[in-house]
Length: 244
Image (cartoon, rainbow, N blue to C red; front, side):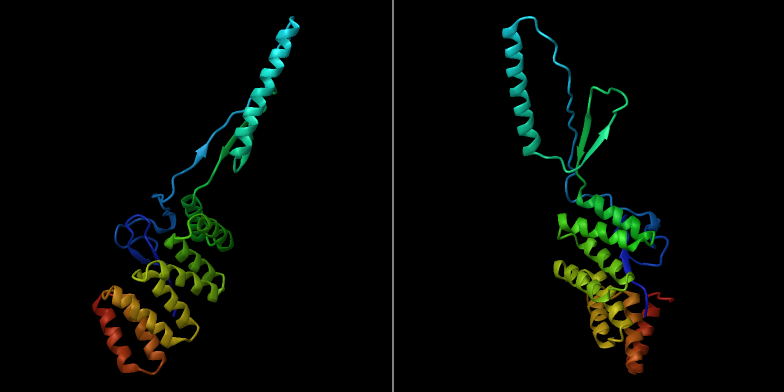
């Protein structure tokens, strides 16, 4: 009993994980990334320039200039430390040694999620997991990130954690078939056939035309020795177009 479901990030249809193209819209599954954002992209660029203070011939002007600089530095310091940038990168040092240019930016939950999907499709599961966890820190109700986290943990052999991730997705939306299906696959692979059947029944209740759910329910029933019930499920799966 193998195979998890994911979903096409172009049309949203559920697709078997081993598919190369979405059967609904034809999108390349391996290159899909999520384009919609549930959080606004936050990006801020700040430029701090240090320039030499010109010499003044009049003493009073020098004092006034120094006081002015102190005030400006204090104001700049207030804004800098009250809004500290999340990350800093040094740029353009070679162009002007007297000028320091820094760029501050933040990464959104959706960007972390998209990076995770890309890494997952490359089989880089540990790196993908880190990205999904970052996305979920920022957006804990991202159901797709919970599902992909579950898929990644499953591929890493961390089955109980994978089931916990699917359960979280189910809590967020009990009427979403994908986490039920993927949870059923893990339970079936662990020999927990009755629990797997319960999951596949949930999928069928949500979508009676899910051919794979009927087929995998049939496999679980057959492994329990319930061959007549299994036969009914196989026939239903074939009727719906299942060819696996």
